[in-house]
Length: 437
Ligand code: ADP
Image (cartoon, rainbow, N blue to C red; front, side, top):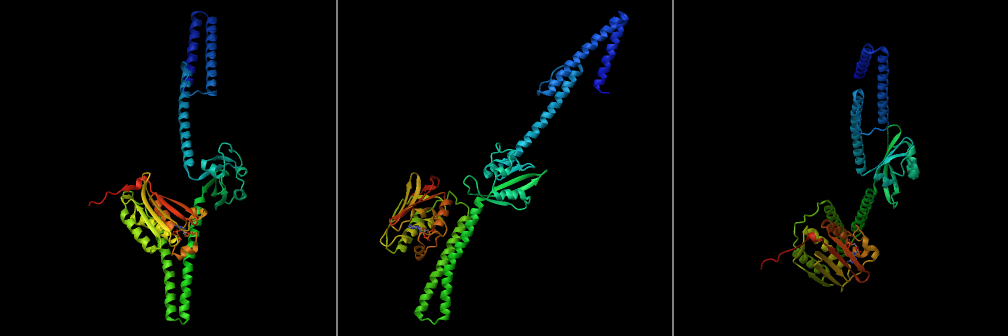
């Protein structure tokens, strides 16, 4: 027997006993009247609390517990305990849900959930960007009304989702490439995962171009070499002809060696960790090296001036800096006709080190400047080849400078000359104390 039955029985028994006692003491009518009045009062009391309970269940106010004597107090208390437990559970589920949403929002991939009619139930911010959706506005919209690319519509309707779909021309500028895959789940629901592979495609295309360029660059001297070999084997040649052919063959093999060397340098630069920022370069030695090389390459065909602050230095890898600066100085000589002038400046400017090479040479058309650091990009192919260029010099410069947090600026005027300026950040700029006398 539960407490409600027990209390009801007790109160009826007490009421009965009271009425019988009053009936016996006064008279039967008075006992009966008292019984009617008490039953009425109990019924009113019950109706009042039933009404109160009804209102409470209709619009429960968490934490508000009405007080009442007897069984009603007990009911309200139990109800309050139930509501408290229920609230705690709801809060837990809400927290789990919000953590789950946060995790999907943090994903670098787009996630969109579709219901059994392919209407958008939910999507994360990345998916909004990928497909140009608006999570609030487009809720319950059929996805193919918003993502209308025929390829996507066909893929979604095909119900064959083992392979992913590549969508091109996406994003605001219609230049992005997405890889999209649908994963069915639950009752006919779908998860649409998307990933921006624009950069991946670009590097893949660059890799393909690079392999094609390397093959082409090596194929030309190889063809020449094998042509000479064939001639030497099949034709009777005079001693002088043999010597000339051997010279030409040597030129071609040295060209190939230079290309392979530069490729190895580039590969090493790409693979190595960033240079330490506490290793000071012996800039005096670098500048001396640059000057010697410049004079030997020019063989007094140019006026070469070095204006250098020898105490100024930077932190990084000396061999890399020598190779980058060397490429800039060599280019200035190679692309400046005899009689021209070359000036090399190494000085502090605005608190940071600056290296500039100015020549009075051929100059570079403005349209070519942004592409100069691409591998194998040449403005004047024949001049580059004639002067022993590999087309990789400025690509090496770019990599070395990137690794030293430095910037390359190029200004040029066709027919008048160019200036290649390297600016190091202040944090890499240092000053060497003069050597003791
Ligand atoms: P290359 O081995 O062909 O010189 P680089 O990468 O060093 O390759 O340079 C790329 C191209 O930039 C060169 O082929 C040349 O056309 C142009 N270039 C570089 N430096 C100069 C310069 N000082 N004056 C004119 N053109 C230059």
